[in-house]
Length: 314
Image 1 (cartoon, one colour):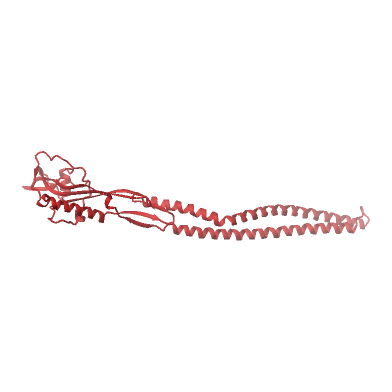
Image 2 (cartoon, rainbow, N blue to C red):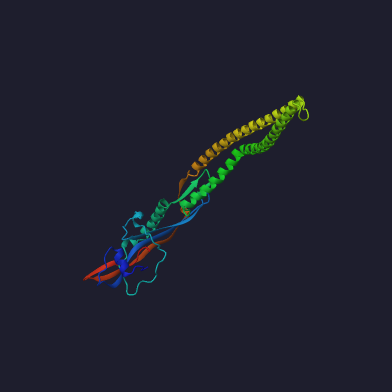
């Protein structure tokens, strides 16, 4: 189609449009147009894509194979006009395009080139079983890998640290109970000290004739109970210190496990490979191959007649 305006045609030709430029006609020249749709379907890698390969060859050589890479057309060749521009002229058909046998050979050559030259890329993280086709961006693929690695990491930490977590919970319960016992033991010790002190005063007063007499046996009993209460406090303090020591060791071990698991899955998340997928020949569909008439503007400017492309890739 004629999709270039006159100024666009000058820009496409790399020329500056003169002020006196005037279009005087349209000339169609023959060319070889080729277009194929290539289907890629791979369920493992999550690929379901379609690629268009197109080529436009002006003045093709009279040979059964071409360097198609040199004639790649970036636009779409499916928008073909069936009617020429009003008043347009047609150039002579290129001799090679009038040879049916040659055109058939070129179509086969084009199909072979599409098969060899067309690939799509997929990404895979085999360890995480995460795959992404060409329609998945790098950022989205990395997010999927991170999510999968995080889930696997949490599961492994739960599995490896589960026993330690149960031990920590049990020790914390014991520590809480022992701290309550310590408070009771300290209160009991304080009361025993007060009782022992009061009893000693009464004993002294009785010996010098004041108040009731207290036996020495009673004083020894009070002293023994006070010593027992002191021993209970010391025992609780030792138990608390031991529980805290064990908790520190368990938490250190849990931290080591967590660090190792995090490091492992941090490495796994970056184990990404790029897979090149090739098409099957049965998935290549040549939907256009044959003679195309490409329009050219005939322009007069500065006393000269210029030929400028009237169409191009959009």
